[in-house]
Image 1 (cartoon, one colour):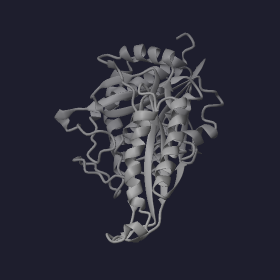
Image 2 (cartoon, rainbow, N blue to C red):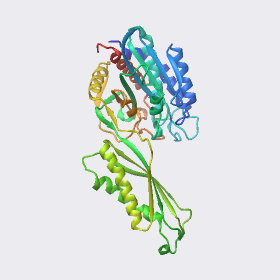
Image 3 (tube, rainbow, N blue to C red):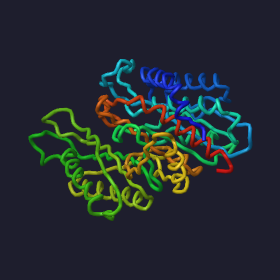
Image 4 (tube, rainbow, N blue to C red):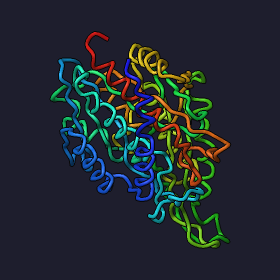
Length: 395
């Protein structure tokens, strides 16, 4: 077994420098041009075949071994979030209102590190490793995985196994966490537009107040998850924004709610969407208003890790010197890596970065999110080990 972790220690400064360079210049979904150029340049320097403009701004790197074997896909997402950074680091974002608050900068840096490790062992690789640098994971609807798949990244040669890694601010630093079967939810975004009849705030009886209806609906929607869905099924319904009105004494014509439903199986997902629509229309009708409900098209599916591959991957990663592998509980966050798992068996696992001694105590998506950079070498090494062993037809 190649000691990829020791080799990763030798290139750790480079991985960290790359991460900080990307962190300072974050780019939002579908706009990752500078990041994509950095990735393409680094991959070419390693002697990999490189294709750009995949699924928009995505980059595909291909490393072909010298022996016949399987094809493994490894994925990193590149996009940042519309968050103003408040983390106390010397390499803070230089882009106002944009931050790598979910660690995608580390994902790119770790996968480039993996590419360097594997390129050094090209003669030992039995098969092909494809590196997917994906745009727009944070988009939540179309995302970046589907356009990359449509552009053929899983074909020619066809991918046999696919792996993804995500850092997690809620898991102890250095812990690698796996879960087989359903691991992350389908995130369905909805908009509810309530139309009433506006008027003067002093005479509400002459109006149909959409704000009042929205308030009733906000409570009623919790009855979908609490009283209409089997309680053993994981489900969350959250309304994240309500927009209405312009002045304190004017009852407006309209109120708009935006929210999300999180489910982990298709029957529950379908029922929940139908019930949200039914309740929104029913509550609005009861007060004389009208509700229009729209769900974002093409929402990410449930992320389901292949049980056999996950078990095997856990055992492989556990052999890394000092590795701590744990079971991860079901999460109701969404991830469009789920789309790759619809094309080939694989697993999506997590690397903890929570380290109170270094101030790494905030969760992903926080403006104060910080990463324990000492874990990055472990991420690179684990991906390299998985690629090396799963490409081998004898494994």
